[in-house]
Image 1 (spheres, rainbow, N blue to C red):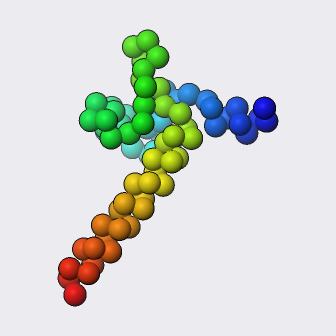
Image 2: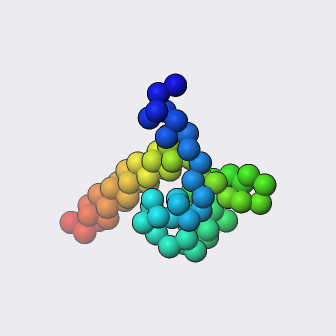
Length: 76
């Protein structure tokens, strides 16, 4: 396994994931409870796979762009 593969598999804590997403940890915790973001528990602690967060960001970015296009069409 290459070093880059190991980095992708690294588990992030809630604080690390919030920093990576550039949001407040409380916001990320709320999203976790609402099942809006991919996460899982190890014992009592929430963990995040960086690769899953990247996929989630891409998916949600596309959804945001589609919503913007629909709203823009309604304004015409």
